[in-house]
Length: 384
Image (cartoon, rainbow, N blue to C red; front, side, top):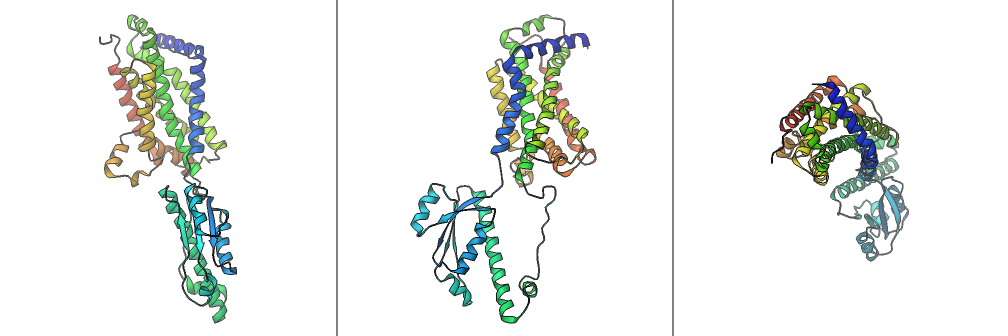
């Protein structure tokens, strides 16, 4: 390999990138743009659920019960209504997602030791949010029941509230969340989006860099020259490796400073693993450039090949363990799964090479296979 010829191709490619100001801007703005749109658009936090109340009892106990919803950060009180008919348009227009109906004689029946029931109407258009909302409601009602029973025992049997609570709930659950104590989905999503953006943009740039030569005909200068396949491929790739390596640092800064996600791992390990991932995904771009002849086709095929698997098979939206067996097998065929483990392990769990070496080796293997496949299929004499 002649390094002088490699440098000549690299310098020529870099000059072309700088000459095309739109392309140069896209090389840096596109990753950040995709990142910001998806980072603020995807959230699994179920909070501030708008709800309305129909209180047919209007007693002190019903108000105390309802304030448990109003004071919760998971619900957003929108007001009282006077009849069930008023709830239907509110739910249909999505002005509220949840309504609770207190029956008449609510306080009277509870004080008499009789069971009563409240009705909840939950918008089921989003099943996941509906199930979570149902869990919130059940937890508040369970707490209300326990507190009511504690008050009853303390008042009738002369026990302290602690003694009554121990009798009512002898077994208590003390939950402790690890790695993401506040359960902020934005921490997981923002760091995980580095996997998605770095899966899309490096192949996008690499594919366009090669296909552009085909489209304007300058590729024939390469065919007629004495430069070898490896020198041409390496020379074309180096500028995009530099751009993508800078994008890693930019996205890393955005994750930590815009979305507030902590980084607990080893910076040098994570950066090295990210560069390997970029080399791997750029290999996808090289293969795409061999299949198409126009930049439009390269963009469309890149989005299909990179974006869709990264969203669906990486574990970003659905845990791999929750997928069907066949889907789990498919997910292991894409490098996104391994880089997402590295990203979450580095950002949230503080893991390093000792725990994540297998995923790094898997990325290296993917990179070697993809670039060998690209090299073997790139010919200086195109088929007619």
